[in-house]
Structures are given as structure tokens and as C-alpha cells.
Length: 138
Image 1 (cartoon, helix red, strand yellow):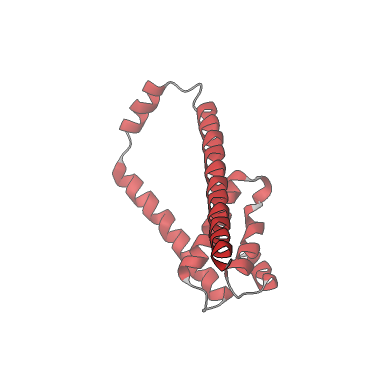
Image 2 (cartoon, one colour):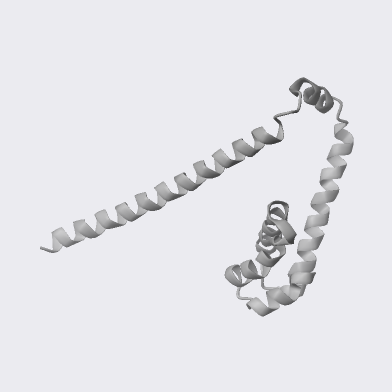
């Protein structure tokens, strides 16, 4: 009788795992389809040969320094935020929270990505939601 119960428990765990995996795959493909659709809409009226010619004229020396300066700016913002929140929070956690906020600012209207930061701080760290909310304006 115990053997039957153990087998049933294992199969239930496998079923939950498969369900979670299927759900993740479904969300991935829905997100991919939405991305492809909007990418196509964005480039629908752009002649690809002109785009290719413009990209071939890029001076990568300046591109390197531009990307490096933006990355340095993000790193400095992360360090500032880490100091203001708490020294116990890892740098990588602060960096991921800031990048999530900036990414959502690009997608959502009205800088709603800024509102996500205190929520993520409360979820990912031992810092309270009011402390994250206090640092929201920084």
C-alpha cells in the first residue's frame, strides 16, 4: 500500500513539473510572437538595403566608448542605490532591480518602471517596502 502512495506522489510531482514547464514555454512563445509582430511593424516601411548601408557606415570606435560610458553610468547608479538602501544587498541584486526598472520604463507609459523598483526591493531583499519606496525618487 505504501509503494502505491509513493508512486502516486512522484507522478503528481512530475505532472506539476511538466505543467510548469509547459506554462513557461507557452509564455515564451507568446512573447516571441508579440516581439516578432512589433519588430515587423517597426521595420515595415524601412528599405533594408538603406538600413544595411547606414549600419555599414557606423564608426565602431565611437560606439565602443558610447556603450562603455552608458554601462559605467548604470554601474555608478547601482553603487549609489546600493549605498542608500543597505550594504547587505548584493551589487548584482541592485543591478538587476535597476535594469528591470529601466527596461519597464521603455515599455510602459508614464515611467511605471520606477514603481516596480520598490516592489522588487521588498521581494528580493530583506529591505522593507517603505525603504524601497523612499529611494524610489533617487
